[in-house]
Length: 192
Image (tube, rainbow, N blue to C red; front, side):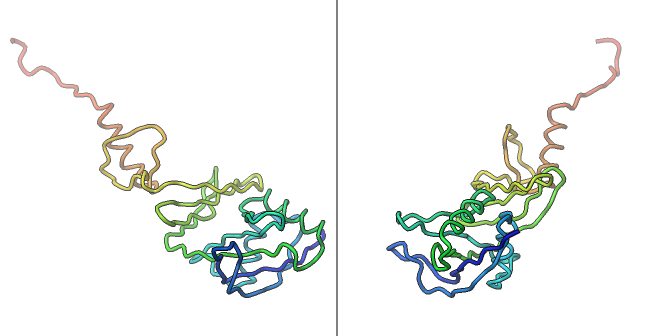
C-alpha cells in the first residue's frame, strides 16, 4: 500500500474572504486505502486533539472555485486521495481543520449499528455512524428540538427520536399499559 504526505493546517479560522488564517502547519502521512475513520484518527493524533472533548471538521479548498470541500465519509477521502495523486505538489490542496468543542459528545456502540460519535452544536446533533460489517461511514444531522427527553411523555408517534434508551423504554411501557390494559372483573352481584 502506498502512502501520501499531506499538509494539515489547524488551530486557525476561516475569514470573510474564505481564506484559512492564523493557523499552525503539520505534515501527516496516511495510507491511500484509508477509511474515513483511519484518516480522521490519524489527523487527530498528529495535531494532538483529544477526540473525547473535541471534534474535527476536515475541509480543503479547490483552486478553481472559492468553495470548500468537506471530507466527512469514505468517498470524500477517496476523492481527496485521487486529487492528491494527480497533483503531487505537497503545498497543493492542504487540509484545513476546524476544531470544534463537543461538550455533549458521547461514544457508544451497539450490535446493528455503531455510533462512533455524536456532537451537539447549535440545537443540532451531528452523528458519525459506522456499520460493523462494512467500512461505510455515514454522517447524520438531527435537530435536537424534536428529541424527546421526558419519561412521562404521553404523545407517541411513528419516527419519534428519544434522548436515550431508558427514556424510550419508560415511554413505551406507559404506552403499552395505556393501550392494551383490560379490566377483567367478575360481577359481584348477579341481580341487577
